[in-house]
Image 1: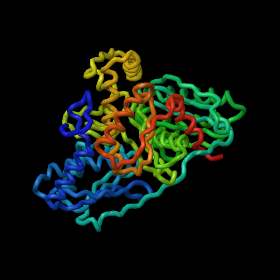
Image 2: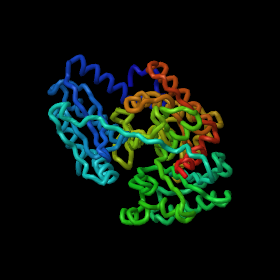
Image 3: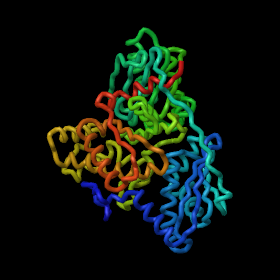
Image 4: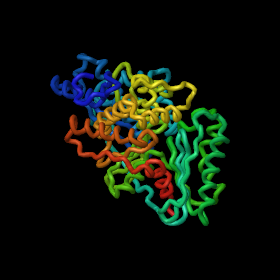
Length: 456
């Protein structure tokens, strides 16, 4: 995209969504366009709201629908929700409704949200902003319980980590490679989880509580949707996966259990290590996980599934195989991003390798001082800097904490440096700090923070 102050070395077509939204808003203001409201309802009648000034009706209706749809998509995956109200524009409402329906362009999102909230997904119209639902939020404290003997388990897409934690100190941690995303038999997942928990239990005199950090959406410790179990047939998912962590914990004992989204645990790990709040945690691993601890040290109950939040409006942006959408975080802030950029960096990767093994090849090239490998991480850093400005539309941020295997080693330092360069050059008004924990915390901090989730 032209006029970026910091260019993405390997992706000259990158079109940051925040810049496009700002340009769109400026044009709408100049033309004195109407203001619309997007209201998004989720569980417990909680409502997230975003007001947008759009172009006058009849000027460029397709542009209006495109920009509002990207905002609806972002809100859905930041906040979660099953009922979208578009207030103030019948044309935009009809454009959104036509996409978020069975057979529509956003059928994946339509189905996913209906499944998570166990409610039919719907798009409603309100003639005026005054008729739309008003904002209603709630937050609650999370974790930071360090007393006793605890197991912290972190289920990643490429490896599983477990820690034995006694009074806040990790006495044992291990990482084991596994392949949850390619296994259709839920007993594979169950046996891996139990084996990890039993190993940690053997390192302590007793187990008082178990905390689990896992990619996906969890309600009352139940798995509602999770990419880790993507190959498990639906019937088996309902029978064996929804309560998989509850059953696994019972093998250790009848003790407190808390299962949380891995992104929220990333943010909690950051809040604990920095001793501050207003933390947006981003885990760059198999996918992109997000989590947030607000300015009061609470979690919000939002979805925080940043993997599906748009960050690039370029029409040539890569498609995510699961959702069928293009330009979303999973292809920009995960091992998929590294693999995507490798050809442009002059790095050939054996198609027979797993994604985690392909990442290791690139990391090996980094150690050798390969210029293309460095440019991969610099490009991801540019993506991140521009996208953090967009995330700031939804989150009040003091600190951004980067974790996950993509941020290991020198690559993480390059990502951090480029992200800060973008923020300084383009958005000096944002005072957020971007942080990398030390190498050990990057690898196992998640499972230790997970251990602090249950209250005894």
